[in-house]
Image 1 (cartoon, rainbow, N blue to C red):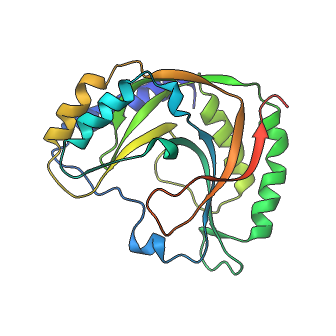
Image 2: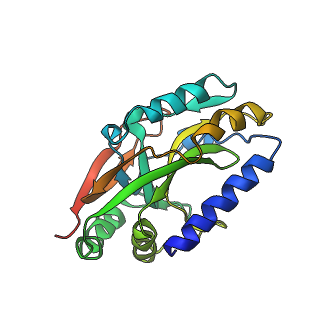
Length: 226
């Protein structure tokens, strides 16, 4: 996704959210999630909380005063580049992979990631899907380019019905409920400059499925420009 298309996508998402009368339940840790046999693996850019100069705290506090909102802890902040699936010995679904396949992906991802130079991500405003609030990414299209290559390597025989748009989720909504209070809470931060940081590596991480915000456990760390 080119940078201009990315910005147009953010504008469309915001306009749709502000026109919506209701929120949607966006929690990922459902009963179905917790019942999976193994951890979930994905490729991410980890977002350091030190990137923010207090503005994120203000935004999250504003959200926390709204009903039906669950704010993400700082240690869980990340930008997903590619979901890989639940790791198990005997895959029986399209979203499951073996440990051997995960290792194969990690090895095949080294050259495409290392061949790209470090880049800067700036968070230039808050936005929201119907089910989750997030920070917009201004990166010149770098995350989308990485996603496109990693998606090819993942060889997942399914794709989302939505185009990839890089984002750092900061809160999920917990019910089908009126949206007005959340819209009012987010609106002052929509065009705020939250901070920036340099991306020097991409991580493949795994998450336990038995808690809402588990640690992002490093499986492989791949430096950019290596």
